[in-house]
Image (cartoon, rainbow, N blue to C red; front, side, top):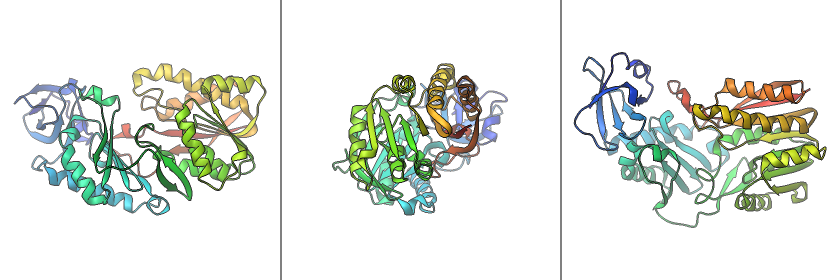
Length: 393
């Protein structure tokens, strides 16, 4: 049992799914890691049931606000089934074979991420509660999706905060999955679910890649942090005149070249450069290079608000450089996936970059994550991906 301090149940009344350690008055019954506990308010009334995590600052993650609801294998099967039903209704389910099937707190399964790449599922168990129920969840995924192969990528740093060791490997079935072929809006990509970043591919950018494809006709395109070429190949497919794609990871560029070869695009129009993006943007600036469309999709610079100050400098640097490399009338599609940098701060950073670049710039569109990455209204922390399409005057 977790009992909350007086006044600290306000967030739970708004159905926020986290209980921070500072809100806890006492813990009774000596619960173990991931055990289900009753949550009581300061008056002693049971208001929810949660997964207990003694080593995390997030001491409890709410399973249900119905104190009478049982937390058992059937509970998780039902939650997974609801998440899958929501995805089946999405347009993306009909235009490709790769989707996020479970998106953590926003699907009422805190700490669980599940992505589907064709016939392989990639699962991340990132919190004590879902770790405790790992086998029933895996069983439900196999039953409800028909995918026999599940690769686990529970190797994110967030597991350390829960006192959990990293783990990766096949947990159901087995098959060659270092190059999982997927289709996205008619384009072919190979996904390395074993060694790639996160679960292997950034499904949250699906619609934004499609938008860049629509904007690329006749343009010279700069793609920073290209990874395996998602934006770059969409730009080629959209009729870009040429594409310069910069990525610091050699293995990622190897996959990117395979992705170019797997599509009906002209490989002569793309130049892959293995380099530090910051350094190479400066090199391009000093050489007087110019582009009509720039895409910046960097890795997470600020996982939490505590790192926001350092992240702000990094975001400003790359956006300043990109804006200097754009011709007048050029477009900058710039993104942040840092949870510690909210939309307002990100806009302010890009505005500062434009000012320092001497550019008259304006926002013409805003970007967010694809619909299979929903954001529960009561969990604004789930809105991690934000982006701007900026027109340089």
